[in-house]
Length: 459
Image 1 (cartoon, rainbow, N blue to C red):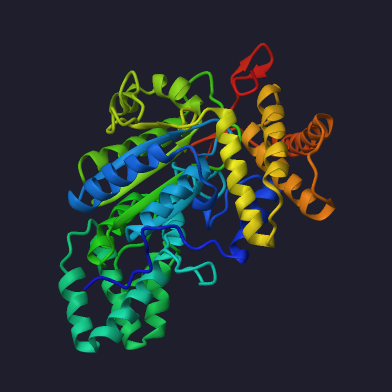
Image 2 (tube, rainbow, N blue to C red):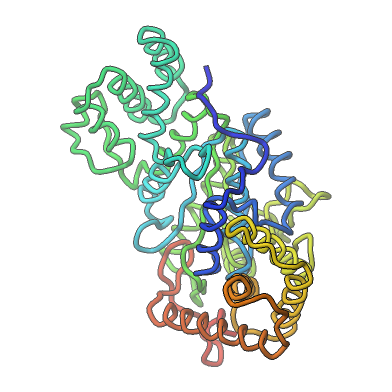
């Protein structure tokens, strides 16, 4: 029996409430909305089609296979936005999806347990609507699964399903399988003490071994078994009735730089990343798609220093396209639309979202006139911050001004003033980040490589 699914092949309805959430989030920081990203997405449809057809439908769902892809883009090029779009595709196909931010303090590849904990904490089911509470976290997903099975099939059949489907499942870690089975039984029996202990263990938290042994679990989560637990999690997903798993890893730091020589922390992180690639190649992560977002510094400077990983990803590295659908790298600088047309299309989408959010229907000439001038200003000038992020924030601000202050087509110098003003805000934010941040790669602090007084990112 498969779990109840709330997925659908079409984007969810754009309600006024969701539209306002989208405009608020994108207008404040220029970042993509966690829900409803399909309503503002343009320009990457070729990549999304390949991922859906070649990987989610064919490789994951039909062939029980797995794959690892790099997603490459500069700061502000839309890496997180793209990952959210792929997550929507996975949700529509009944995959469990986890979005994990790699960072030095909370989740570094050199600390496998923190990676597992982040996945177990963020793995999530699709939502029916923006009004629904998310079902997020491995233990909550399992609890819902147990409650659904109990309600549909009754206690005796539910117990038999657990023992037949999961009790003898080919899962790497016996302790993980035991914790999974015991937790589901505890939820069905209403044994709250046991379910709390086992839920904490499944989240990778520090459960004293003496307490874990009460539930037949004789292993504690650690960095030594962190990736084995991650393998066990995705191996269990299909047995639980889901179509597979999508793991999305996004570099949390804005600036990525390199040391002039190898460092132990970077070498260890590369080894862990290489292991993930190998696991996909050996199908030890069945029905799993992994996307890891990096900057161009990774392919240009990191890969040549680590030939073992470079060999696995290809040298010279190949880019995903309809003519090369098995290539390992997705380049977000090569989209379906050129920069002016891309910004214009994004602007049209955002104008539609504003209409839904506020019942705001200005004349087309007003929207088009202001949009074309803004696109021209942003693309023609050599701006010091990401032009896409700057455009989104400025356009949403301009839409608010037209709605509140009156409908008119702004003069070119007024558009330039808005852009300069928004650029200044972004530069102040960036400078604040730079003054406090530590240069990182794969969630590890690194020393910058200096060239004529500048880091490789500053050149």
